[in-house]
Amino acid sequence: MLSDMIKKEFIQLELEVTDWEEAIRQSAAPLLNLGKITDEYVEKIIETTRTVGPYIVVTKHVALPHAPTQYGALDLAMGITTLKTPVISGNKTNDPVKYLFCMSAKDSETHLESMAELVNLLSDKEFYQVLDSAKEPQEILTYIYEKE
Image (cartoon, rainbow, N blue to C red; front, side):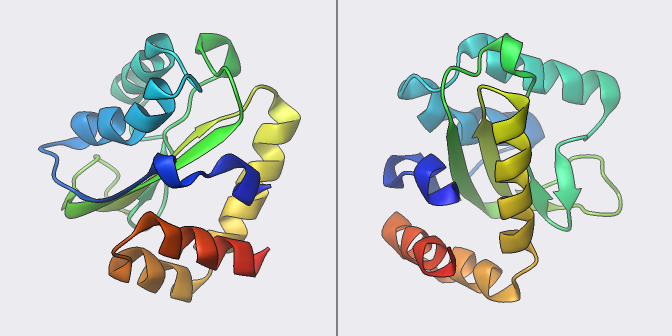
């Protein structure tokens, strides 16, 4: 399923951002620009993070920006963003954040299935090496295809 969600156009490498909010906006930009999510979806992620705290930080150095479907998840998609300089999210256990996986799913079943696949990938130390060394988005996609 991840290979259905992640397209080369959704992968951004070594982005420079100033803070966690810009990191969220930048990680969501390809999905927004290609009609997979709405502006409201991005704003809901940021609003919820401000209100609830860094709920999107799921493990060491990894954030999964997402919001409930009704706020503008238009199609199944996942972006991958790596940051040149990690940012502080406020999650003391898992900061700083270096990798963002912005996700959009149109229903909760798809959301849970894609999360399970992502968890498997995030437990693979080699995947982080690929994220850190990739010069082109296709290198990451190839790794994901091989793992499926």
